[in-house]
Structures are given as C-alpha cells and as structure tokens.
View 1 (tube, rainbow, N blue to C red):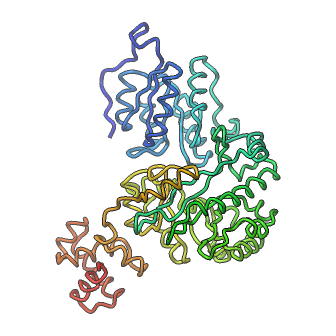
View 2: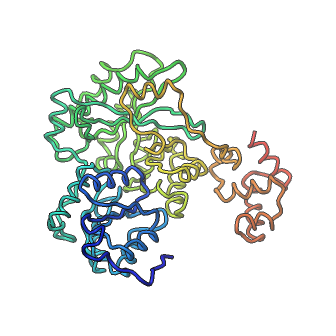
View 3: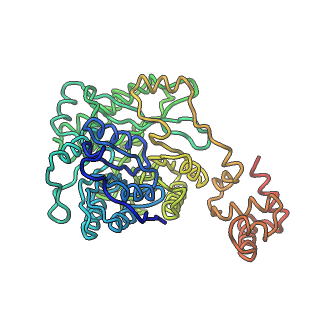
Length: 489
C-alpha cells in the first residue's frame, strides 16, 4: 500500500532547483528509463528514476515534478492504481503514459486520468525513438498545448514509425540492413535461430513490412529483400551440426503478390541442411481470408517455408483457422509474457497458449522476455523458446555471426529437472499444480507437509494425489514415486 507523507510542499519559487524543471520516471524497462533520462539531461531537465509506485508518490508529494512518465504495467502496480494515487496526492503536473499494448488502451487510460482531474500528456507506444522524448521536453519548456484526450484525439502512431518516404528511400537505394535477434531453446539454453528485422542502413530506423501507409510496391520490394537477404545470411550463420532457423515477419498481401517460388528457388542455399525460413503472420491475417491463407501456406510449405502465428493471444484466431495453417510455431505476445511470474492472469494465458501450441505440434516462443523471474516462470510452464532484449538484442549479420561463433547460451538452472517439467512435455494432461504435488510426493512428504509447502489443505493434496494416480496409471503411492524418479533421469 502506498503511504502518503503528512507534510509536503512543492519547492518554493527561486529555490535551488527552480531553474531546472523536473521529471519522474516509473518503468521496469531499464533501456527506456535511460532514454528518458538522457533526453531530460539534453534538454536541461532533472530526472529521477523511481523504483516503485510508492517511491514515485512519496517523491511527488515531497517535490512536485513538472511531468511524470509511467509505464501502464509495472512490477508492483498498474496505470489505474498510479492515476488514483496521483489524484489523491493532488498532482497538477503532466502525466505521460507508455506501453507496448494497443493504442486504444492507452487512450482509455488517458480518459480515466482526465476524469480524475489529472493533466494527461502524450501516449507513447513502445518502442519509441529518443527524438520523441526530447520533443516532449521541448514542448514542456515552450508550454506547447498537450494532445487531446478522448474521441477528438488524433490517431496515435508509434513514435518510432518510419515514413513512407524513408521506406521508399531504403528499398530503392539499397539501404536495407537486416538485424537478427537470437531465439533461445529453453530446454538447452542455446540459440537455435533468430528473428530478422529490417532497418535503414544509415538512420537505423526500423522498417516495417506491414506499414499500411507505405506504397504496395515498396512493401513488396522490402519483403523480397528480406527473404533474399535472410537466405544469403544463413550461409554465414550455419555451422557443422547447427542450422539456424530464421523467422521473418512480412505481410500476407505481399506474399500473395510476389512470385514466391521464383524468389526462393533463386536465393535458397543449395544444401540439404537448409531448414527453410519461417514466415510470421499475424492473427488478423490468419483469420481474414481463410482461402487465401490456405493456398499461400501450402505454397510456402512446398518451398520449405514454415508458418508462425505472431503475437498470439491478442486476436481472435479460430481453431479451424489454426488447423488450415498448421503453424510450425506460435509466438506469445509480450503483453502476456511480461510479469507472467507475478500476475496470475498473464501466467494462465501463457500456460494455455503453450499447451495449445503443443497440441498443434508447434513450437511456443515467448517474445519480449524482460526478467529472470519471467524467464524461469516460462520454463516452468514448459515454453519451448524465448526471445527479448533482456536475453540478447538484435544484431547485424556480422555481429550475429560472431555471437554464434562464441557459443553464447543462457545459463539456466536445472528447473526442468527439479520440477519434473519434462514429464509434462510428454504428458500434457498434468497441470502445473499436479506437477508440484508429484514432486513433493517423490520427496517422501506427507499430505500435511505438501499442503503446508503449497498453501493447500491436506484434503486437497489427497484429491490431487488421487488424480495423479488415475492419470499416470499408478496403483499406489510407491508407483507414483517410481514414475517421478524415472522422469528425473
């Protein structure tokens, strides 16, 4: 609970800090905090990175900042809680919200802030460029009117989005460079491949092949460049007994317009070891035109291209649509991956998506992993792979090649073995709670001891034990212990 100091006041005019405006930052993402702090320093603002909502409120009451940057989903709080506390603290500065979630949610939260009498500023969609932050500080210094909130607000665009002109320049001048973000196998901790992103070689702006505002011919050209470059770079990355799997996100409409067969035949490595590419499609694309997606998916498989459903869990993919695509992998949206170790809802969503992917014979990939705690939680859930800046940032081809040559891998504790989770990989009928109960049974603990360890009653543990015996065809506790011990080796 946030404690409010009883005595507080804003700094008096003419005080030692009066000549420099002040901002507070509440965000779990260290790189984002650094970007904001750096932008503040460049524009002669003071900045304070607050470790928690409680610390933010205490500082706000003690010394009022001119503006506050808040990520809507913190480790110990969320934006609604923050807005409530800021209202109670009578904060009269400007609140800027940040998130990777959908812009509509940011707008809703801004409206909530207004109804609570707060002054709401920009809604920043991550990732954003440093220039966007510096612009906010410049506007604050000049007293520029704030963006509108509500139905009259202008459309929200991610601040790091490139213009159609930038994309056109990149594809026509040969300025497209691919970066590769490693993906790690959570069974071994070793990289098995990477997701490729296109950037402008000079400005390093991210070039999205799904920009609706770009000219179709530029999107098609970028898609072709990404496919061709990824196939060429694969030759650099491949090692004896290691054939990295490269995933690319390109628009379905471009795949439908381009001569995919010709592009693949012309650019593919002429070796039987090439695992092909994986094309990541969005849930909206998968459900939008079932006939088209079925045809394109079949054509892709002919040429060794797998299908991944990206940011799974944010759309309305039907089981029939999944069946027609037969995905090779399904990526879990970062909004569910973040805080999956501490938020029950996120954990349950991740668990359901991991099980769904496994039932379809697809690899589950958690995107946007941002902490050791979330990584360990994903391992316990049986997730197959992980990706995120916390694990490894996107690298240019030559840097990714050196990364692979070094043999870097995740230093994973023996979570799978200690928690018998590899047993669950082979028997998806077992729930996480059943796995935990089975582990305690294998250690020889009684129902009372197991209940105390897991926060359950002895009677509930007896129910779980009966379920385990039925699912694992064990006639008694001794056979349950034997199953557990066998699974460990």
